[in-house]
Length: 629
Image (tube, rainbow, N blue to C red):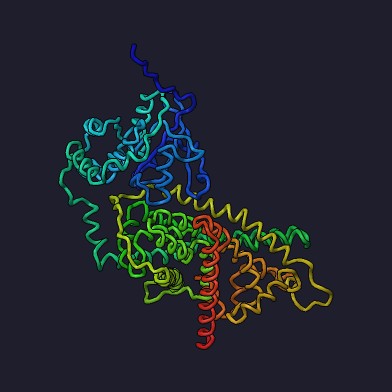
């Protein structure tokens, strides 16, 4: 009697569905569409790579757990992200449950590149569903994929989805319900992936394409016509420079009215508090600590939102990969590839996501150098400092009847950060003896109008992050700074404001010996200390310090006239130069430590940025003094 083959046991708990695919295939949009708010984000154990998991219930009442794996081009991993994806799919990640089914998401407009990953995963022998995403865009471009033939060729269910549209995920959910109940399965060894050569895999991809895909040969589409100008060797860089220039002009021009409204509201609130509260410690805390500090930072929210509006528009419409392509030659001159552009661009928001985005860089030396120069990109935390000093000391007038002078200065500060980053990269690459550049491979998505929903969500998240920092980190530091600036108080017969005799005043006067050569007074020195926690705190700190520096019952309604009367132009220019290179906030240094798994790099970063900041500020201050500033 022959042996009876036992059936695999049925999965007793919610089946785990793993979403996997190339970067920019719409995988995360599909994850958000399926899970909505029912998702949680954490890090994989021992690394800083993000782990996103959610839940959803199908129309048939079946419940699923959904895991959004980091994007990968191949399971022959070359980056930390790809290693995590490979280990999770193969069931080799300690403490991580193996997926019960893999949903491989592919971009229907770029199927040739995506199919290599599909064939590699298939060799692991796991249950699979092929999700053909962006089929609407493919049809507009004359690309028709026969889902039935593709399913026959790859040997798995194939469904069509449009992740950005409501209901666009229904076919995938129905396919998963069709696999119910799920049975436990074990992946084949990873050696199965390498059993077939890359060349043979590519031949198989071409064969499948010839059978299942029909292309209208209409390659003169809108995107290619636009790229004829946007990627032109001469016109392309000019267009990029003009776009960036217009962004910084708008940051000042468009934000003026809402900033005045916020500033007026904070000032009015301060007057109300002073009018209806008796003089004392509590009133000083509210007016000098909370309103004088937090209010000074809150006023810059419109400028930050305008800056991110343009960045989100350029990203959503498909321009940013083109910018990376345009900058590849420039960055190659300093030893980097255009692949570093996206992490560096992310650093304009905050250095932390920029540093984390460097994981996608395969070359270890390139990755380290990108991490080390990312903080030199002008992050949004610097913007309040720039805006304050520029508004106080740079006249609001037109240049050549076209440009706003304040916007020009802001553009120059951002440009100075970029140039300094390229210079540091040039030095580091040569000191690390890495002269061979890695070729740039990028997908250029089709141009399309930005999705208003995506823009609204992006701006909402940015405003939420900023306001949370104002309401937590900045408020806490402002209250602490107010306490240090108010006690122990002035002695009898004091000739200076009370803050002069406080703990903060003593610390500021001690630091003044170090920073006096670069034009900083003791009030600025006090503000630099909490600025190590978050750069934008420096503006709030200045607001608190100068509010407490007023003699008698005088309280400036605005920080601008106070610093205008207290500083000279050389000091103002010196402070701008300092913040181009200012040493990093502690949270950034912590992330560098985690990403590099070494204390050497955060210490080196803090040291070299302090030296650069001090030298640049010293030169700026002395030159401004010599020119009679």
